[in-house]
Length: 129
Length: 130
Image 1: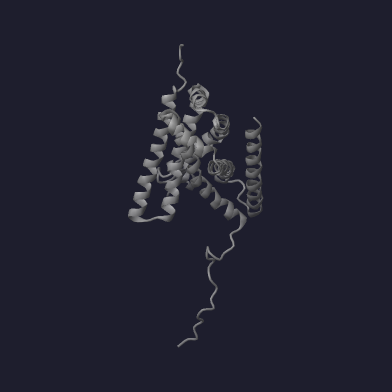
Image 2: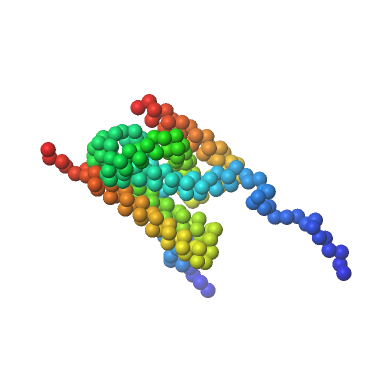
């Protein structure tokens, strides 16, 4: 006779003690993006249409730089994990593996491009004139 | 041989002929908007990289961003972002066990569509006023 209750076996990480990490990561990044999304819309909305010098100066400021960096990084990590579910649902075998690899590499490439651009703009560096 | 009923059996709903309930439409739209959003973020990141690359590269990216095509992509992405945000918020409630009744899901589906359109229009108004 088992003295353990079904609740004890299922709560926390579940009876397998793994497999909920993906869902939890999506939950955490979703809540983070709930905050970051309106901030990012305001940040980018204020910069679109500016001439190049003003765009460079704008994203050199700490707040626009950090909001943009956080949104792209958290957003693309959320994208990588989100496409994984879509790929698992619709593709099998080699195509599935190829699609997962492509999605991860693509996601990190977008992050790298954004971080490179923001770093070149100064990432909020204090410029002494 | 038994009298077999051929060709007149009830069929299971097929995706191509089955009219999806609104809750199913808003659910699949969450996935579609989430994936389509990548077009918006790639356009923004390309624009940022072009700004640090050269004047010519920025002129090209800026022209695309400010063209009618860029306007459609960015406005579409902005609506998709609001939709995906609201749908994701509903999903957090679903995960916690709330709003799973059919009538509630129908109401939140209507709220999702209306809310995302209202927020997108508000965003456009604020963008063009300020």
